[in-house]
Length: 503
Ligand SMILES: Cc1cc2nc3c(=O)[nH]c(=O)nc-3n(C[C@H](O)[C@H](O)[C@H](O)COP(=O)(O)OP(=O)(O)OC[C@H]3O[C@@H](n4cnc5c(N)ncnc54)[C@H](O)[C@@H]3O)c2cc1C
Image (cartoon, rainbow, N blue to C red; front, top):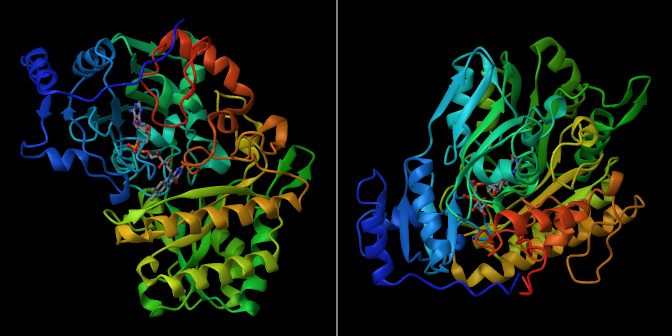
Protein backbone atom coordinates (compact mmCIF):
# COMPACT_ATOMS: atom_id res chain seq x y z
CA UNK A 1 0.00 0.00 0.00
CA UNK A 2 1.25 3.47 -0.84
CA UNK A 3 0.83 6.76 0.97
CA UNK A 4 -2.50 8.45 1.64
CA UNK A 5 -2.89 11.61 -0.39
CA UNK A 6 -4.21 14.86 1.01
CA UNK A 7 -7.90 15.18 0.09
CA UNK A 8 -8.88 18.07 -2.16
CA UNK A 9 -11.80 20.51 -2.09
CA UNK A 10 -14.77 20.61 -4.46
CA UNK A 11 -14.69 22.57 -7.74
CA UNK A 12 -17.57 23.80 -9.95
CA UNK A 13 -16.87 20.85 -12.22
CA UNK A 14 -17.34 18.43 -9.29
CA UNK A 15 -20.67 20.04 -8.43
CA UNK A 16 -21.88 19.77 -11.96
CA UNK A 17 -20.65 16.13 -12.22
CA UNK A 18 -22.49 15.25 -9.01
CA UNK A 19 -25.67 16.94 -10.23
CA UNK A 20 -25.40 14.84 -13.36
CA UNK A 21 -24.71 11.57 -11.51
CA UNK A 22 -27.60 12.14 -9.10
CA UNK A 23 -29.99 13.64 -11.66
CA UNK A 24 -32.45 10.74 -11.72
CA UNK A 25 -32.62 10.38 -7.95
CA UNK A 26 -34.42 12.06 -5.06
CA UNK A 27 -31.19 13.44 -3.55
CA UNK A 28 -30.99 17.16 -2.83
CA UNK A 29 -27.73 18.82 -3.95
CA UNK A 30 -26.84 22.26 -2.62
CA UNK A 31 -23.94 24.46 -3.65
CA UNK A 32 -22.95 27.27 -1.23
CA UNK A 33 -25.07 29.83 -3.09
CA UNK A 34 -28.20 27.63 -3.18
CA UNK A 35 -31.21 28.03 -0.89
CA UNK A 36 -31.25 25.52 2.02
CA UNK A 37 -27.43 25.10 1.90
CA UNK A 38 -27.01 26.79 5.29
CA UNK A 39 -29.56 24.45 6.86
CA UNK A 40 -27.52 21.45 5.73
CA UNK A 41 -24.26 22.74 7.19
CA UNK A 42 -25.63 24.02 10.50
CA UNK A 43 -24.59 22.12 13.62
CA UNK A 44 -25.67 21.71 17.25
CA UNK A 45 -22.58 23.71 18.21
CA UNK A 46 -22.06 26.81 16.07
CA UNK A 47 -18.31 26.37 16.68
CA UNK A 48 -18.45 23.07 14.74
CA UNK A 49 -19.82 24.50 11.48
CA UNK A 50 -17.67 24.52 8.34
CA UNK A 51 -18.45 25.61 4.76
CA UNK A 52 -18.84 22.42 2.70
CA UNK A 53 -17.98 22.68 -1.00
CA UNK A 54 -21.24 20.93 -1.76
CA UNK A 55 -23.92 19.47 0.52
CA UNK A 56 -25.93 16.43 -0.51
CA UNK A 57 -29.03 15.21 1.30
CA UNK A 58 -29.66 11.65 0.04
CA UNK A 59 -32.79 9.57 0.60
CA UNK A 60 -31.35 6.03 0.31
CA UNK A 61 -28.17 3.93 0.37
CA UNK A 62 -27.81 3.97 -3.42
CA UNK A 63 -27.67 7.78 -3.51
CA UNK A 64 -25.13 7.78 -0.67
CA UNK A 65 -23.12 5.23 -2.67
CA UNK A 66 -22.96 7.47 -5.75
CA UNK A 67 -21.66 10.43 -3.72
CA UNK A 68 -19.13 8.38 -1.71
CA UNK A 69 -17.78 6.62 -4.80
CA UNK A 70 -17.32 9.98 -6.54
CA UNK A 71 -15.49 11.41 -3.50
CA UNK A 72 -13.15 8.40 -3.31
CA UNK A 73 -12.39 8.23 -7.02
CA UNK A 74 -11.64 11.95 -7.11
CA UNK A 75 -9.72 12.24 -3.84
CA UNK A 76 -12.24 14.68 -2.35
CA UNK A 77 -12.63 15.49 1.33
CA UNK A 78 -15.78 13.87 2.71
CA UNK A 79 -17.87 14.40 5.83
CA UNK A 80 -21.01 12.63 7.04
CA UNK A 81 -23.62 14.22 9.25
CA UNK A 82 -25.88 12.16 11.47
CA UNK A 83 -27.44 14.24 14.26
CA UNK A 84 -24.79 16.98 13.95
CA UNK A 85 -23.79 16.95 17.64
CA UNK A 86 -20.04 16.47 17.29
CA UNK A 87 -18.55 19.56 18.96
CA UNK A 88 -15.22 18.84 17.25
CA UNK A 89 -16.62 19.40 13.76
CA UNK A 90 -16.34 15.70 12.88
CA UNK A 91 -19.47 15.90 10.74
CA UNK A 92 -18.35 19.01 8.83
CA UNK A 93 -15.94 19.62 5.95
CA UNK A 94 -14.12 22.72 4.88
CA UNK A 95 -14.70 22.69 1.12
CA UNK A 96 -15.37 18.96 0.64
CA UNK A 97 -18.49 16.88 0.00
CA UNK A 98 -20.95 16.79 2.89
CA UNK A 99 -23.43 13.92 3.06
CA UNK A 100 -26.25 15.10 5.26
CA UNK A 101 -28.27 12.11 6.46
CA UNK A 102 -30.37 14.00 8.96
CA UNK A 103 -32.42 15.97 6.44
CA UNK A 104 -34.06 13.08 4.58
CA UNK A 105 -33.06 9.77 6.17
CA UNK A 106 -34.71 9.72 9.60
CA UNK A 107 -37.26 6.99 9.21
CA UNK A 108 -37.73 4.38 11.97
CA UNK A 109 -39.80 1.22 11.51
CA UNK A 110 -40.60 -1.29 14.22
CA UNK A 111 -40.52 -5.04 13.66
CA UNK A 112 -42.95 -5.96 16.43
CA UNK A 113 -42.43 -9.67 16.11
CA UNK A 114 -38.66 -9.52 16.62
CA UNK A 115 -38.91 -6.38 18.76
CA UNK A 116 -36.31 -4.77 16.55
CA UNK A 117 -35.99 -1.20 15.31
CA UNK A 118 -34.88 -0.42 11.76
CA UNK A 119 -33.42 3.07 11.93
CA UNK A 120 -32.17 5.17 9.01
CA UNK A 121 -28.67 6.64 9.42
CA UNK A 122 -29.80 10.25 10.00
CA UNK A 123 -32.43 9.58 12.68
CA UNK A 124 -32.38 11.38 16.02
CA UNK A 125 -33.01 9.53 19.29
CA UNK A 126 -36.38 11.27 19.60
CA UNK A 127 -37.42 9.50 16.36
CA UNK A 128 -36.38 6.16 17.87
CA UNK A 129 -37.88 6.74 21.33
CA UNK A 130 -41.22 7.84 19.90
CA UNK A 131 -41.54 5.02 17.33
CA UNK A 132 -40.58 2.34 19.88
CA UNK A 133 -42.77 3.76 22.65
CA UNK A 134 -45.79 3.73 20.35
CA UNK A 135 -45.40 -0.08 20.39
CA UNK A 136 -44.60 -0.30 24.14
CA UNK A 137 -40.87 -0.75 23.50
CA UNK A 138 -37.58 1.03 24.20
CA UNK A 139 -33.87 0.52 23.62
CA UNK A 140 -30.67 2.09 24.93
CA UNK A 141 -30.26 5.55 23.36
CA UNK A 142 -28.96 9.06 23.97
CA UNK A 143 -30.07 10.92 27.07
CA UNK A 144 -30.69 14.09 25.05
CA UNK A 145 -33.34 13.25 22.50
CA UNK A 146 -32.07 15.51 19.71
CA UNK A 147 -28.65 13.80 19.47
CA UNK A 148 -28.10 11.57 16.44
CA UNK A 149 -28.32 7.80 16.41
CA UNK A 150 -25.39 7.73 13.95
CA UNK A 151 -22.44 9.20 15.84
CA UNK A 152 -23.63 8.13 19.27
CA UNK A 153 -24.06 4.49 18.26
CA UNK A 154 -20.95 4.15 16.11
CA UNK A 155 -18.82 5.42 19.02
CA UNK A 156 -20.39 3.17 21.70
CA UNK A 157 -23.40 4.90 23.21
CA UNK A 158 -24.38 5.24 26.87
CA UNK A 159 -28.04 5.79 27.80
CA UNK A 160 -30.60 5.67 30.57
CA UNK A 161 -31.01 1.90 30.14
CA UNK A 162 -27.26 1.12 30.11
CA UNK A 163 -27.43 -0.25 33.65
CA UNK A 164 -29.58 -3.16 32.50
CA UNK A 165 -29.00 -3.32 28.73
CA UNK A 166 -25.40 -2.15 28.31
CA UNK A 167 -24.24 0.23 25.61
CA UNK A 168 -26.14 0.97 22.41
CA UNK A 169 -23.61 -1.29 20.64
CA UNK A 170 -24.57 -4.17 22.92
CA UNK A 171 -27.96 -3.95 21.22
CA UNK A 172 -27.00 -3.52 17.55
CA UNK A 173 -28.05 -6.49 15.45
CA UNK A 174 -27.15 -5.28 11.95
CA UNK A 175 -25.73 -2.34 10.02
CA UNK A 176 -26.25 -1.45 6.36
CA UNK A 177 -23.11 0.39 5.32
CA UNK A 178 -21.95 2.23 2.23
CA UNK A 179 -18.23 1.55 1.94
CA UNK A 180 -15.58 3.91 0.55
CA UNK A 181 -15.83 2.31 -2.91
CA UNK A 182 -19.60 2.93 -2.96
CA UNK A 183 -20.60 -0.70 -2.35
CA UNK A 184 -23.54 -1.35 -0.05
CA UNK A 185 -22.91 -4.11 2.49
CA UNK A 186 -24.74 -5.65 5.41
CA UNK A 187 -22.78 -6.41 8.57
CA UNK A 188 -24.02 -8.61 11.40
CA UNK A 189 -22.66 -11.50 13.47
CA UNK A 190 -22.98 -13.93 10.56
CA UNK A 191 -22.22 -11.71 7.56
CA UNK A 192 -19.12 -9.48 7.40
CA UNK A 193 -18.62 -10.18 11.09
CA UNK A 194 -15.23 -8.37 11.21
CA UNK A 195 -16.86 -5.23 9.84
CA UNK A 196 -19.67 -5.66 12.40
CA UNK A 197 -17.03 -5.79 15.16
CA UNK A 198 -15.32 -2.63 13.82
CA UNK A 199 -18.57 -0.67 13.44
CA UNK A 200 -19.47 -1.38 17.07
CA UNK A 201 -17.18 1.23 18.60
CA UNK A 202 -15.11 2.67 15.74
CA UNK A 203 -17.91 2.92 13.20
CA UNK A 204 -17.29 6.47 11.98
CA UNK A 205 -14.10 5.18 10.36
CA UNK A 206 -15.54 2.48 8.11
CA UNK A 207 -18.34 3.86 5.97
CA UNK A 208 -21.71 5.56 5.99
CA UNK A 209 -24.21 3.55 8.00
CA UNK A 210 -27.54 4.02 6.28
CA UNK A 211 -29.50 1.65 8.52
CA UNK A 212 -29.06 0.43 12.09
CA UNK A 213 -31.05 -2.51 13.44
CA UNK A 214 -31.34 -2.31 17.22
CA UNK A 215 -32.89 -4.74 19.66
CA UNK A 216 -35.71 -3.22 21.70
CA UNK A 217 -37.45 -4.44 24.87
CA UNK A 218 -40.91 -4.10 26.43
CA UNK A 219 -40.92 -0.84 28.38
CA UNK A 220 -43.29 0.57 31.01
CA UNK A 221 -43.46 4.13 32.37
CA UNK A 222 -40.47 5.22 34.45
CA UNK A 223 -40.04 7.28 37.64
CA UNK A 224 -38.05 10.39 36.76
CA UNK A 225 -37.46 14.09 37.13
CA UNK A 226 -35.15 16.94 37.98
CA UNK A 227 -34.06 17.98 41.45
CA UNK A 228 -32.17 21.19 42.20
CA UNK A 229 -30.10 21.70 45.32
CA UNK A 230 -28.30 24.80 46.60
CA UNK A 231 -24.56 24.20 46.15
CA UNK A 232 -23.51 24.61 49.80
CA UNK A 233 -20.71 22.50 51.25
CA UNK A 234 -23.13 20.85 53.70
CA UNK A 235 -25.51 19.81 50.91
CA UNK A 236 -22.69 18.68 48.63
CA UNK A 237 -21.32 16.47 51.41
CA UNK A 238 -24.71 14.83 51.90
CA UNK A 239 -25.27 14.42 48.17
CA UNK A 240 -21.89 12.78 47.67
CA UNK A 241 -22.70 10.29 50.49
CA UNK A 242 -26.09 9.46 48.95
CA UNK A 243 -24.61 9.03 45.45
CA UNK A 244 -21.81 6.82 46.76
CA UNK A 245 -24.39 4.63 48.46
CA UNK A 246 -26.65 4.35 45.38
CA UNK A 247 -23.94 3.77 42.75
CA UNK A 248 -21.21 1.94 44.68
CA UNK A 249 -20.34 -1.36 42.98
CA UNK A 250 -20.22 -4.20 45.50
CA UNK A 251 -19.72 -7.96 45.29
CA UNK A 252 -22.70 -10.29 45.39
CA UNK A 253 -22.84 -14.08 44.92
CA UNK A 254 -24.00 -13.32 41.34
CA UNK A 255 -21.13 -10.93 40.62
CA UNK A 256 -20.65 -7.14 40.95
CA UNK A 257 -23.84 -5.04 41.35
CA UNK A 258 -25.17 -1.71 42.56
CA UNK A 259 -28.06 -1.08 44.96
CA UNK A 260 -30.71 -0.60 42.23
CA UNK A 261 -29.44 -3.56 40.18
CA UNK A 262 -28.89 -1.28 37.22
CA UNK A 263 -32.29 0.41 37.21
CA UNK A 264 -31.28 3.85 38.54
CA UNK A 265 -29.50 6.45 36.44
CA UNK A 266 -28.56 10.00 37.40
CA UNK A 267 -26.86 12.94 35.81
CA UNK A 268 -25.55 15.22 38.54
CA UNK A 269 -23.64 18.43 38.03
CA UNK A 270 -23.03 22.09 38.51
CA UNK A 271 -25.11 24.49 36.44
CA UNK A 272 -26.80 27.86 36.64
CA UNK A 273 -30.38 27.02 35.67
CA UNK A 274 -32.82 29.88 35.02
CA UNK A 275 -34.82 29.70 38.28
CA UNK A 276 -31.60 30.06 40.33
CA UNK A 277 -31.00 33.68 39.18
CA UNK A 278 -27.34 33.22 38.38
CA UNK A 279 -26.48 31.08 41.40
CA UNK A 280 -24.62 27.80 40.99
CA UNK A 281 -26.91 24.88 41.79
CA UNK A 282 -26.44 21.15 41.92
CA UNK A 283 -28.72 19.80 39.22
CA UNK A 284 -29.75 16.16 39.42
CA UNK A 285 -31.70 14.44 36.67
CA UNK A 286 -32.77 11.03 37.92
CA UNK A 287 -34.50 8.09 36.30
CA UNK A 288 -35.59 4.83 37.87
CA UNK A 289 -36.81 2.09 35.54
CA UNK A 290 -39.53 0.72 37.78
CA UNK A 291 -42.62 1.64 39.82
CA UNK A 292 -42.98 4.87 41.81
CA UNK A 293 -42.97 3.18 45.21
CA UNK A 294 -39.58 1.55 44.60
CA UNK A 295 -38.17 4.71 43.02
CA UNK A 296 -39.25 6.84 45.94
CA UNK A 297 -37.55 4.47 48.34
CA UNK A 298 -34.28 4.56 46.39
CA UNK A 299 -34.24 8.34 46.04
CA UNK A 300 -35.52 9.06 49.59
CA UNK A 301 -32.00 9.97 50.83
CA UNK A 302 -31.97 12.76 48.20
CA UNK A 303 -35.45 13.98 49.19
CA UNK A 304 -34.25 14.05 52.82
CA UNK A 305 -31.46 16.48 51.87
CA UNK A 306 -34.16 18.98 50.90
CA UNK A 307 -34.08 19.85 47.19
CA UNK A 308 -35.17 23.41 46.34
CA UNK A 309 -36.98 21.94 43.33
CA UNK A 310 -38.26 18.36 43.11
CA UNK A 311 -40.09 17.30 39.95
CA UNK A 312 -39.89 13.50 40.38
CA UNK A 313 -42.93 11.72 38.92
CA UNK A 314 -43.99 8.79 36.71
CA UNK A 315 -43.77 9.49 32.97
CA UNK A 316 -43.61 7.75 29.57
CA UNK A 317 -40.10 6.47 28.81
CA UNK A 318 -39.29 9.06 26.05
CA UNK A 319 -39.51 11.81 28.71
CA UNK A 320 -36.37 10.34 30.33
CA UNK A 321 -34.38 11.60 27.34
CA UNK A 322 -35.98 15.06 27.40
CA UNK A 323 -34.95 16.12 30.91
CA UNK A 324 -31.97 18.02 29.44
CA UNK A 325 -33.07 20.82 27.10
CA UNK A 326 -31.76 20.71 23.51
CA UNK A 327 -29.79 24.02 23.62
CA UNK A 328 -29.30 24.04 19.81
CA UNK A 329 -27.19 26.76 18.22
CA UNK A 330 -24.77 27.95 20.92
CA UNK A 331 -21.02 27.51 20.65
CA UNK A 332 -20.01 24.48 22.64
CA UNK A 333 -17.23 22.07 23.29
CA UNK A 334 -17.09 18.85 25.21
CA UNK A 335 -14.45 16.99 27.16
CA UNK A 336 -14.95 13.92 29.24
CA UNK A 337 -12.89 11.98 31.72
CA UNK A 338 -13.40 8.76 33.59
CA UNK A 339 -13.91 8.68 37.34
CA UNK A 340 -14.32 5.96 39.94
CA UNK A 341 -16.70 5.65 42.85
CA UNK A 342 -16.63 6.57 45.66
CA UNK A 343 -16.72 10.27 44.88
CA UNK A 344 -14.60 12.44 47.16
CA UNK A 345 -16.41 15.49 48.58
CA UNK A 346 -13.32 17.70 48.48
CA UNK A 347 -12.76 16.89 44.83
CA UNK A 348 -16.37 17.76 43.97
CA UNK A 349 -15.96 21.07 45.83
CA UNK A 350 -12.69 21.81 44.01
CA UNK A 351 -14.52 21.36 40.72
CA UNK A 352 -17.22 23.72 41.93
CA UNK A 353 -14.69 26.44 42.78
CA UNK A 354 -13.07 26.16 39.35
CA UNK A 355 -16.50 26.25 37.68
CA UNK A 356 -17.54 29.33 39.66
CA UNK A 357 -14.25 31.14 39.03
CA UNK A 358 -14.47 30.44 35.31
CA UNK A 359 -18.03 31.71 34.90
CA UNK A 360 -17.24 34.77 36.98
CA UNK A 361 -14.39 35.56 34.59
CA UNK A 362 -16.45 34.81 31.46
CA UNK A 363 -20.14 35.60 31.85
CA UNK A 364 -20.74 34.64 28.23
CA UNK A 365 -20.18 31.02 29.33
CA UNK A 366 -22.86 31.00 32.06
CA UNK A 367 -24.87 28.14 30.45
CA UNK A 368 -21.82 25.78 30.85
CA UNK A 369 -22.18 22.58 32.86
CA UNK A 370 -19.91 20.06 34.56
CA UNK A 371 -21.61 16.73 35.15
CA UNK A 372 -21.05 13.30 36.64
CA UNK A 373 -22.94 10.55 34.81
CA UNK A 374 -24.05 7.74 37.08
CA UNK A 375 -25.11 4.49 35.45
CA UNK A 376 -24.61 1.08 36.97
CA UNK A 377 -21.43 0.18 35.03
CA UNK A 378 -21.61 -3.60 35.57
CA UNK A 379 -23.48 -4.57 32.41
CA UNK A 380 -21.23 -2.39 30.24
CA UNK A 381 -18.10 -3.75 31.93
CA UNK A 382 -19.09 -7.38 31.50
CA UNK A 383 -19.97 -7.35 27.79
CA UNK A 384 -17.32 -8.21 25.20
CA UNK A 385 -19.08 -6.82 22.10
CA UNK A 386 -17.29 -4.81 19.43
CA UNK A 387 -14.14 -2.77 19.07
CA UNK A 388 -15.19 -0.32 21.83
CA UNK A 389 -12.24 -0.11 24.21
CA UNK A 390 -13.70 1.72 27.19
CA UNK A 391 -15.50 -1.03 29.09
CA UNK A 392 -14.88 -1.04 32.82
CA UNK A 393 -16.31 -0.32 36.25
CA UNK A 394 -15.61 3.37 35.87
CA UNK A 395 -18.03 6.21 35.10
CA UNK A 396 -17.94 9.17 32.67
CA UNK A 397 -17.78 12.81 33.61
CA UNK A 398 -18.50 15.57 31.18
CA UNK A 399 -17.26 19.15 31.02
CA UNK A 400 -19.35 21.14 28.58
CA UNK A 401 -18.63 24.84 28.20
CA UNK A 402 -21.35 26.70 26.30
CA UNK A 403 -20.94 30.24 25.10
CA UNK A 404 -21.91 32.67 22.31
CA UNK A 405 -18.97 34.84 21.28
CA UNK A 406 -16.30 33.40 18.93
CA UNK A 407 -13.61 35.41 20.75
CA UNK A 408 -14.20 33.16 23.79
CA UNK A 409 -13.55 29.91 21.86
CA UNK A 410 -10.02 29.40 23.17
CA UNK A 411 -10.60 30.11 26.81
CA UNK A 412 -13.78 28.00 26.93
CA UNK A 413 -11.97 25.03 25.37
CA UNK A 414 -9.09 25.53 27.79
CA UNK A 415 -11.56 25.43 30.69
CA UNK A 416 -12.79 22.04 29.42
CA UNK A 417 -9.20 20.77 29.18
CA UNK A 418 -8.30 22.04 32.66
CA UNK A 419 -11.28 20.40 34.34
CA UNK A 420 -10.85 17.17 32.43
CA UNK A 421 -7.24 17.12 33.67
CA UNK A 422 -8.50 17.52 37.25
CA UNK A 423 -10.67 14.42 36.74
CA UNK A 424 -7.71 12.53 35.29
CA UNK A 425 -5.55 13.40 38.30
CA UNK A 426 -8.35 12.40 40.66
CA UNK A 427 -8.62 8.96 39.10
CA UNK A 428 -4.97 8.38 39.94
CA UNK A 429 -5.96 8.55 43.59
CA UNK A 430 -7.92 5.36 42.91
CA UNK A 431 -4.83 3.66 41.49
CA UNK A 432 -5.83 4.22 37.84
CA UNK A 433 -4.58 6.56 35.21
CA UNK A 434 -6.48 7.68 32.13
CA UNK A 435 -4.62 7.71 28.83
CA UNK A 436 -2.31 10.69 28.42
CA UNK A 437 -3.53 12.29 25.21
CA UNK A 438 -0.02 13.04 24.02
CA UNK A 439 2.46 10.71 22.40
CA UNK A 440 4.34 8.96 25.14
CA UNK A 441 1.72 9.95 27.74
CA UNK A 442 0.94 7.56 30.55
CA UNK A 443 -1.58 4.96 29.51
CA UNK A 444 -2.50 2.79 32.45
CA UNK A 445 -5.75 0.97 31.82
CA UNK A 446 -8.90 0.06 33.76
CA UNK A 447 -10.54 -3.36 33.59
CA UNK A 448 -9.17 -5.69 30.91
CA UNK A 449 -7.32 -2.90 29.16
CA UNK A 450 -10.17 -0.36 29.20
CA UNK A 451 -8.81 2.96 27.95
CA UNK A 452 -10.90 4.99 30.42
CA UNK A 453 -11.69 7.53 27.70
CA UNK A 454 -15.00 7.79 25.89
CA UNK A 455 -14.25 8.88 22.32
CA UNK A 456 -17.66 10.46 21.82
CA UNK A 457 -16.85 12.87 24.66
CA UNK A 458 -13.13 13.30 24.07
CA UNK A 459 -13.17 14.87 20.68
CA UNK A 460 -9.90 16.78 20.80
CA UNK A 461 -6.35 16.21 22.06
CA UNK A 462 -6.65 12.45 22.41
CA UNK A 463 -4.97 10.15 19.92
CA UNK A 464 -6.74 7.36 18.04
CA UNK A 465 -4.51 4.78 19.75
CA UNK A 466 -5.59 6.12 23.15
CA UNK A 467 -9.26 5.82 22.25
CA UNK A 468 -9.17 2.39 20.60
CA UNK A 469 -6.59 0.83 22.92
CA UNK A 470 -6.04 -2.88 22.35
CA UNK A 471 -8.51 -2.87 19.41
CA UNK A 472 -6.31 -0.50 17.40
CA UNK A 473 -4.08 -3.03 15.53
CA UNK A 474 -7.07 -5.07 14.32
CA UNK A 475 -8.89 -1.87 13.37
CA UNK A 476 -5.87 -0.83 11.27
CA UNK A 477 -5.96 -4.14 9.45
CA UNK A 478 -9.69 -3.79 8.70
CA UNK A 479 -9.24 -0.15 7.72
CA UNK A 480 -6.73 -1.28 5.10
CA UNK A 481 -9.36 -3.68 3.77
CA UNK A 482 -12.45 -1.44 3.83
CA UNK A 483 -11.13 2.12 3.53
CA UNK A 484 -7.51 1.99 2.29
CA UNK A 485 -7.53 5.66 1.19
CA UNK A 486 -8.87 6.78 4.56
CA UNK A 487 -11.93 8.57 3.26
CA UNK A 488 -13.64 8.34 6.65
CA UNK A 489 -11.12 10.26 8.71
CA UNK A 490 -12.93 12.92 10.70
CA UNK A 491 -13.07 11.35 14.16
CA UNK A 492 -10.08 9.49 15.59
CA UNK A 493 -8.79 8.53 12.17
CA UNK A 494 -7.31 5.05 11.92
CA UNK A 495 -4.15 4.71 9.88
CA UNK A 496 -4.73 1.78 7.50
CA UNK A 497 -2.23 -1.02 7.99
CA UNK A 498 0.77 -0.44 5.73
CA UNK A 499 -0.09 3.19 4.86
CA UNK A 500 2.70 5.72 5.19
CA UNK A 501 0.84 8.98 5.85
CA UNK A 502 0.91 10.25 9.43
CA UNK A 503 -2.68 10.77 10.60
C1 LIG B 1 -26.08 17.51 24.11
C2 LIG B 1 -25.33 16.21 23.95
C3 LIG B 1 -25.77 15.09 24.64
C4 LIG B 1 -25.10 13.88 24.51
N1 LIG B 1 -25.56 12.77 25.19
C5 LIG B 1 -24.93 11.58 25.03
C6 LIG B 1 -25.44 10.40 25.67
O1 LIG B 1 -26.43 10.41 26.37
N2 LIG B 1 -24.76 9.24 25.48
C7 LIG B 1 -23.65 9.17 24.70
O2 LIG B 1 -23.09 8.07 24.58
N3 LIG B 1 -23.16 10.26 24.08
C8 LIG B 1 -23.78 11.45 24.21
N4 LIG B 1 -23.30 12.57 23.57
C9 LIG B 1 -22.09 12.45 22.73
C10 LIG B 1 -22.50 11.94 21.37
O3 LIG B 1 -22.40 10.53 21.38
C11 LIG B 1 -21.60 12.51 20.26
O4 LIG B 1 -21.67 13.90 20.25
C12 LIG B 1 -21.98 11.96 18.89
O5 LIG B 1 -20.96 12.30 17.99
C13 LIG B 1 -23.30 12.51 18.38
O6 LIG B 1 -23.67 11.88 17.20
P1 LIG B 1 -24.41 12.71 16.04
O7 LIG B 1 -24.81 11.76 14.99
O8 LIG B 1 -25.43 13.60 16.64
O9 LIG B 1 -23.22 13.64 15.58
P2 LIG B 1 -22.60 14.03 14.17
O10 LIG B 1 -21.88 15.31 14.45
O11 LIG B 1 -23.57 14.04 13.07
O12 LIG B 1 -21.57 12.85 13.91
C14 LIG B 1 -20.50 12.54 14.78
C15 LIG B 1 -19.56 11.61 14.04
O13 LIG B 1 -20.26 10.43 13.64
C16 LIG B 1 -20.28 10.29 12.22
N5 LIG B 1 -21.59 9.80 11.81
C17 LIG B 1 -22.80 10.21 12.24
N6 LIG B 1 -23.76 9.47 11.68
C18 LIG B 1 -23.16 8.58 10.88
C19 LIG B 1 -23.62 7.53 10.03
N7 LIG B 1 -24.92 7.23 9.94
N8 LIG B 1 -22.70 6.80 9.34
C20 LIG B 1 -21.38 7.07 9.45
N9 LIG B 1 -20.88 8.05 10.26
C21 LIG B 1 -21.77 8.79 10.95
C22 LIG B 1 -19.98 11.68 11.68
O14 LIG B 1 -19.39 11.61 10.42
C23 LIG B 1 -19.02 12.20 12.74
O15 LIG B 1 -17.73 11.69 12.53
C24 LIG B 1 -23.96 13.79 23.68
C25 LIG B 1 -23.51 14.93 23.00
C26 LIG B 1 -24.18 16.13 23.13
C27 LIG B 1 -23.68 17.34 22.39
